[in-house]
Length: 376
Image 1 (spheres, one colour):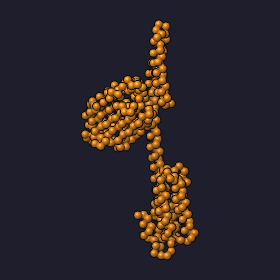
Image 2 (cartoon, helix red, strand yellow):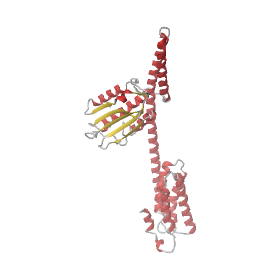
Image 3 (cartoon, one colour):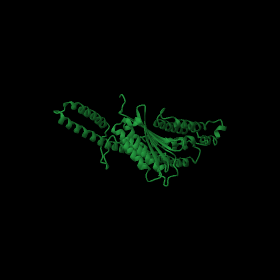
Image 4 (spheres, helix red, strand yellow):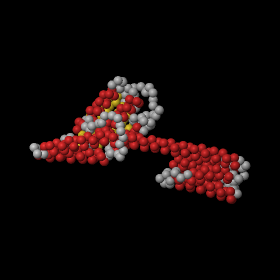
């Protein structure tokens, strides 16, 4: 439709001259460059091609003494302005943006016989300023969001590091106790030394595995140090607390294979965090909904699912960010980013989304060390 604005006022279509031809062809060419996918040609190269092509057409028409019919190329200008905003947003080097701005401002010079061409060029300087401002604003917003995502990921890494520090300290304490016990009985009961050494070896391997996942920086966090092996007890207490005091109902279902699975300490704390954040999310966004927490085994991996029904009533004070923007845990729309970072750190996967009945579902899969009673 913008291209038609170039076509309608062109008197050249009814004359043998072809002065109208360049402006009518540059518009579709600019549109093609604007719509070409980045995987075919980078945005910076397309910006340079569009700017150089537009300036070449303008210079060629001035040298040839041609006039641009009734238009200098509105479609071309619109495409160049859009490309200018995108270039300011995504391209690091600003030279391509300078070239695009110059091409837009110089385009009205094609209408050499029109006394208003200078006024059009002056007006386009404001359009160029708006495009540059919009692109820079979006660039700043992208940078702010990237920094916020990095901060959430770093926070989750540090939280995981703190948890792993507690687990490693627990394992090392057990190793020291068993080593002292071995020294005490090596003379009186030497036949008991081998089982103690096996336990020390097992605890040492688990400690090394946790240490490999430990991030470099640890932070001080108030709270009770968590111990491995207490996952299901803590989840039961968490679900019980969720049901108390408000019109919320939740159930916890743990399949026998899942209960028999042996998990790494960092996997336990990650499962704990996923359930905790999901329950918090359900309380905030789905008051009165029924929540079901299920844990089972599938293909040798622990499956954790937290599903809630639609809310019985809309929340009294909706958060600033919608649920689609902050599906789990809130925190300015980055709760899911932090959870995914934590789950990915332990070689797990996490997904979240709406259910057909209007509820919400968070599902994660986690690796297990072994299943009690299995051959492995």
